[in-house]
View (cartoon, rainbow, N blue to C red):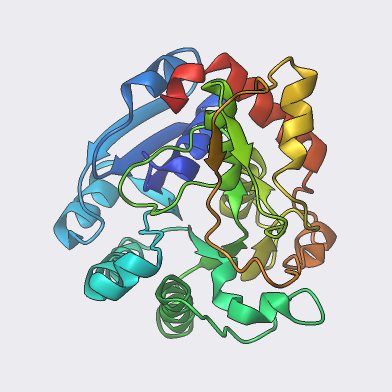
Length: 323
């Protein structure tokens, strides 16, 4: 069975491809710009087969052809624009065209092809300021997005659930918290790279990351997200349709400094200070999105220590990625 991954050249997409190819799977990787050259040797050493297709998620004819020509039965949809305030102010139509209309076109094609399952990579951003409330947001809470990105993800979810009711679209939705880990890079689709990535880049360049006191949140490892999305695509025993995917607890990215220091990566006393930017409120305590439902239903559990250690190991083994 061949599985389609959209947004395959992005941060989550590369983690998904590595995980699936490591399982020996046949995958079609759809992206706008193609896979980065530094990633291809990783795939060459894995047992699975990845076929690359370049194209725009908004191209319905292309999508229909990919589903038909590759006999796609299951889809993990990760193509998105992770917009910041400036882009949302200047190009709102472009954000909505990709995140909502591109997703809707994919859903139409999935319905027409009668795929077995469509997994949507949504976001904890649909909860908006509820994440700063008195308790962790749960899947039953109504979306209250506070950004255009959150609005676009809530709209994508709404279209999917409506098509599930009208046309029997077999859909599962993963509301993913903020992600860190291997293969994050600037692609033009993500307006601000994660603080963990910024910390690693500064340290590997010999600089000293400058971190604010606030900014703790439930950063979730990219490997865990990839494993969870694949489980949602594969397993019939996960009822869904919506699952929060996060670390289950908040932590501050400064915790990574100790892990790098344990590996001998400590900035010199006279190292240049580099501010680490956060796309988040720094004046309030953030709740983690609740992940009990996923774990209770038998989905993967997040191991924060493993995720942090894996990221530091990967960063030290791939310093050129941060140039």
